[in-house]
Structures are given as structure tokens and as C-alpha cells.
Image (cartoon, rainbow, N blue to C red; front, side, top):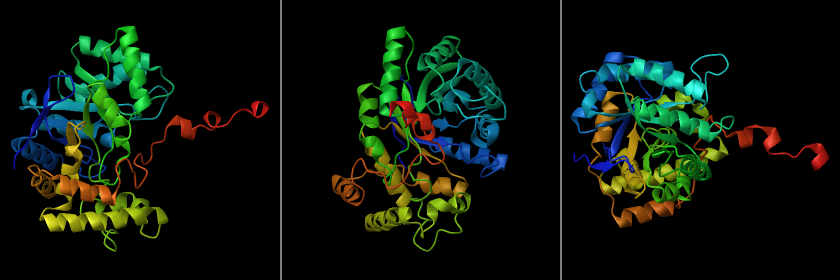
Length: 346
């Protein structure tokens, strides 16, 4: 195993090209806190120095587990978390407003048992809040020493550019990172998000390199029903649904390619994402120690141009075989008035 390190955008912070994602730690997947701590320690011992979580993962429980694991190793770890989604009922308890962000960062610091967060990320766009408001509070948090840098997650390219120009025009600090979905099955960000991040000198840490489990090797034709992800979101893995046919066909071809190379399908999938010149780190999100060990085996894998050409033939550059955003939709799609003129103006 040969863990590689790259500088995260213009931050000067060196991070491992594999980032340990903590979404699976807590009640949503693995509520054994001690096992979660052991998994994190094993990842750190293997050379991973980058850990990513979010306040909404298991309603804060993931952050608590990460905090326990890093108690005596905090100085050696680049710690990232996120804000946006609600953690409880009530107004003003979600989004990217100054009011919510100020409260959320304090809660995250407490759960993580740390004095600072290295990379604080806005989990999704908030169309109710002016991006200047969000950049302003994040800039203040950097100046207060509570966070070191900040970024965005799953932002469209045009909103990344807008935020960049607002920061320049208002004398604010800017988003230094973007965290988009990216895999061999979901390559849409190659069209504009990744080129935009490159032009703006942003670090990129990609989520779901295994395509929500489709590239884990456990979801094959006729063999998905009992896998964890399939029980969590069965509609994504239902072979009878027409939209899933292309995914299963592509998975079979990727699995054949991995077999020919003598590597595991997950190793091939993750190595693909870190090959793109815009990508700094790929987030791996193991639920068990066995899954972590399997993912670490592929840390040294480097793909040749011939292999990358084969991948391009299976899923063309810039193509998505499924809706990568899952349950989240932008307001431009959810809110009818944003898609339809008033009757008297049609």
C-alpha cells in the first residue's frame, strides 16, 4: 500500500488521496461507537490523514464518534465537516444563514471535541440565503480561528463561479474546496464542475466513488437484494425498474475489466476518480473494518491509459447513468413557480 498526498487547492494543507468518510458511523448504519473508533484508527495508521463527516450524519452521532477517535491524534488529522441540513424540527434550524451557521459550528466543535475545524463545508446550496451572507459568516469564523478554510458541496458550476466573484467583489474569503459526487457511473461533473474547480484553484474531494454501493462488488445482477445499501434504498437496486438496467449492465462490464486486471472492483472505481487532475481526494465510507481493509488494498493502484480508455467506452466522459443527487433536489426543480410563468404572463 502506498498512500499518496496532495495539496488541497490553494490552502497549503496536504491531505491523503483517500479521505475517510464517516457517514456510516452512527445509528444510520453502524452504531457501535468503539468499532467506529477502531476503524478510524486503522485508517490513520494506514496513512490516511483526512477525515470527513457532517453534522447531519446520524443527527450528530457521527461527529461524536469521530471526536472520540481523534482525541489524542487531532494535530495529525485534517478534519472536515459540513453544515446545511436540519437536525431537528423548527424554523431557522437549517440552511446557510448566519444565524444557523453560527449555531451549527459551535455544536459541531462540541461534538467533535476540538477547538477548530480544518475544512468547514456548506453541504448544499441554500436559495433562500444570499451567498454573500454565507461567505461573510464563514470568513468571520476563519478570522475567529474556529475554522481554517471553508468549501462547498454539490454546488453547480455556475454557483461556484457566482460565489467566487461575490467573494472577490466584497473582499471576503472564498470557497477553497468543492465536494461533488463522482464515480465511473456518474461522470457528469466532468463537463463543468471539475474544469471550473481547476480554473479557480479549488481542492476537490469527491463523494460516492462506489456509486452508492453499485461499484462495491456486492450489487450484481440477481444478487443485490440482501446487501446493506439495497435494504436502505431498495428502489436504487431494483432490477425491474428500467432506469436501473444501464447501471447493472455497466457494473458487469466494469467487474469484467477489474477481473482482467486482477484487482477488485472497488479498487478500480476509486483509482478512477483520483486519476482526474482536478480531484484531490476520494472519500471512502466503510461501514465495517472488513470494508476498510478491502478499500485500503487499492490505495496503490494506478490506471494506465488503456484501462481509462476501456472505462470511457463503458460510460462516456460527462455521462451519468443515474440521478446522483438522490433525495436532494434544487429549488429550481422543486418549486413550481421557478419553472412556470404566472398565468397572466404566459
